[in-house]
Each structure stands twice: as structure tokens, then as C-alpha cells.
Amino acid sequence: MLTGLLKSFFIHAGPFSVVRALQRIKKGPCISILYGHRVLPDEVIANQADSRTITGQTSVSEVWCAIQELRKFYTIISMDEAVAQIKNGHIKTDSVVLTFDDGFQDNFTHLYPLLKKHNIPATYYVNSSVISTKNSLWFQSIINYFFAVREASVFVSFSNRTYDLSTATKRYESAFHFMRYLQANYKPEEFHSIIESVAGELRFPNEDDLHMTWEDLKELSKDPLITIGAHSYNHYPLGFCDEKLSSYEINQSINELENHLGYKIVHFSYPRGHQEDFNQHHIDCLKSKQIISAVSTIRGVNRKGEDLHRLRRVGLPQNVSKAKADFIWHVGGLPELVKSIKSKRAN
Ligand SMILES: [Zn+2]
Image 1 (cartoon, rainbow, N blue to C red):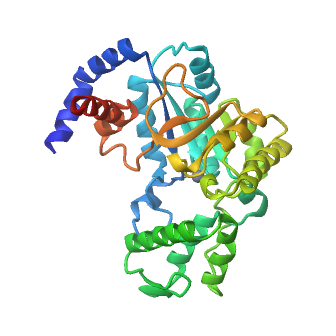
Image 2: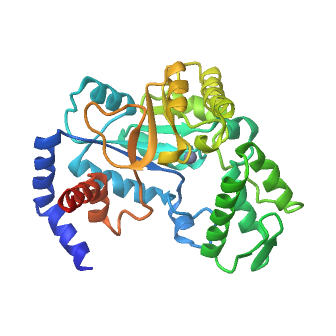
Image 3: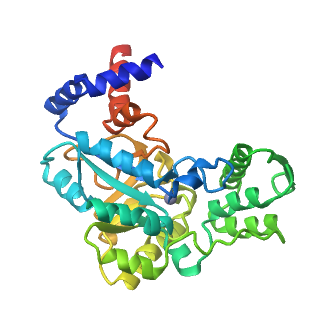
């Protein structure tokens, strides 16, 4: 509580601006790239038992609240503009890029009208397999499975474990536990068939509305506010794939997007995007497809001269309105600044 009040004072009463000014003198202005996933109606997010409510998903009004807060401290720019400024070594002012991963249909039906109305640029990173096949992404299928089982627990012989499904939170924890089990023990190309065999006859809820269609993407691609980028074909963490599969995952997603949308795709987002999820082979592969930027989920801001294929991002929280000071604190990369000061002191 006290920390919250101090942060609020620190940001809104001015010292935040002082720290930012000092950072700017030392390191120059920064570009913060925010990432989100699903953007849903407020009533869906309010229902914690709904399988669509998950960390990283937020509501339309919370996105609007985030945009209003960001506008007080930052310029919201497109990914093309961010790349140009980082490359030229001249970042004009502290800026933010909004990005949304996985190509969810709600990004078209709920988020896009808001962006359009307020003239806000954003980038959508899309996994082309779900657009073409209408199947769910592998991890989404796991979440669907753990929410579709009616009982309060389930024994999965595949992982030889009983999973607690007594609450929505437990169902998520179980789903993520099973995801980690698959990643640790099986090849990504085996994920789909394993999930199908585990799910058996269980029927999933209708998923027709989960991801955008090619028609939706074509409409978005005509709007200069929206940048479409690739996010791999199947959303396998690339670090878990062999070179042949990771090359396919990258190339196939870029080729399909270009074929359907009729223009060059130049931006990419690494699936999952942790440190271990991308390496030099993937970067070489992206460069051979003329991809000029790639974003991770490694937390932090970006400054002039940054490696454009290793850009850092900051997650968009579910509830900005309840923690505005924390939000701005994180977007500004201040936790990383405090961490670096602490580690310098310790050395
Ligand atoms: Zn993703």
C-alpha cells in the first residue's frame, strides 16, 4: 500500500519525470514495446471462472485506460517508426509501440474499433496456421482441454499425474503444468497428436470465433494504423525445434501472410519469446526473409543502436486502472534501472 502510494507520488508529482530526464541524459530516450494478447468485453474479464480470462488478456476499457495513461508520458508510434528511429540512432522522444500476439479474433472485433477511433497505431503478430486451418494453437488446445473436463480432477496417464481442476485458477495451473511437461519431454511436432490423444472423445467448446480470418486480416492490412507481423506457423517455441523445423516455422508463416495479404512482411515476434526461445540460426533465417525487426518477451526498453532482432518488450497488465503508477513504472523500464543500480552497488 505504502509502496503504491510512494510510486504514485513519484510518478505523478514529478520525480518520475526527473529520473526519466536523468536516464535520457545518460542513455538517450527509450522506446518501450508493450505486448498483449486477447482484448475482450469487460463482462468476460470480470468473470474469473471464464476460460478466456487469463494473465495477459485484458478488457477494452483497460486498454483504453492504458492508452490514456501512456499518452501522458509517451508518444505512441508504429513499429516501422520505432525501427527507423533505433536504426538511425536518433530516438526523438520517449515512445511506446503497442503490439498484440497470436491473431485473436477479438483483436479485430473489440480492439481495432478502439484503435481506429482514437487513431492509435498497433502491430498484430499472427500465427498463420490458425488462420488457415482454424485449429487452435497447441497451448490453447491444452487450456481448452483442462477447462472442458467436467470433473474436479483428472488423471492423465500420458504424464502419469492427477490434475486439480477444482477452480478456474487450478485449471490454469494444471494446463500450464502439462504444457511444461510436453515441452520438457516431447518434440514440438508431437504436441498436437499428444493433446488429441489425451483429449480423446472430449468435445471442446466451439472455437470458430477464436482467431481472425484471412478476410479480417485483409481488411486490417489496408489500414496504415495496423502493421501485420509474423509469429511463426504453429507457435512452437523455436528453441525447442531442430533447425529444419524452426526454419519451416519461420518461413511458412511469412510466406502465407505475404501470399494472402499481397505485401512484404518485415516484422516478427518470437513465440513465447524467452531468452532460450531464439538463437542466431533463427535470426539468420529471419534476415534471409528480409525481416527487419524481431521482438522477444525479455523485459526492458530499447534505445538507439539496439539489436533490431532482439528487441525487448513489456507485458500489458490485465488491470491498468487499479495500478496506474505501477504500469507507468514498468513501461519506463524503471525496475530494470533499479536492478542495474543494485547489481552495480553489489559488485
Ligand atoms: Zn504468442
